[in-house]
Image (tube, rainbow, N blue to C red; front, side, top):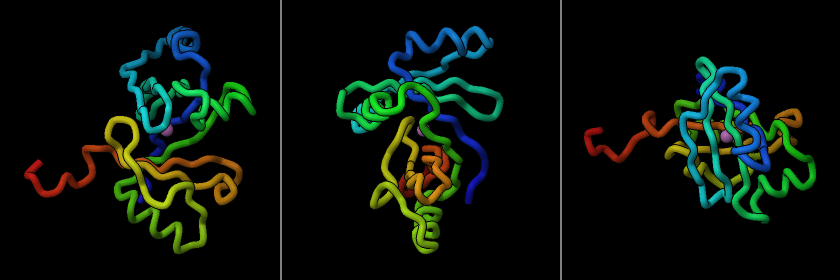
Length: 142
Ligand code: CO
């Protein structure tokens, strides 16, 4: 089930160049993380209950690099927070909606993520993200 708007993902050529604008609003980057499997560096900026996610490519063949090449910097995706991404993935598939990946994968901060194809979401790339703390670590008593 979807529990809220987790973040808005914005493609930038450089986090260092882009951060000044957000800092001028009084906001702050609280963490920067590289996600090698996506070819991206991610900077998280809390905004109330939600966040802005700045996405900087680390490889020329990464999805963010290709997005910047064809569209330039700007809004790349919206992300809603799920409490069970496997279940949301399955029910969307059952409804005939197109997902980007065969199954949820590990994203920034150890979250589990899946993407709904823009063709199935009114032209919006929609990320479903289940925070690391909310999913089962295999019954190790956590
Ligand atoms: Co995201």
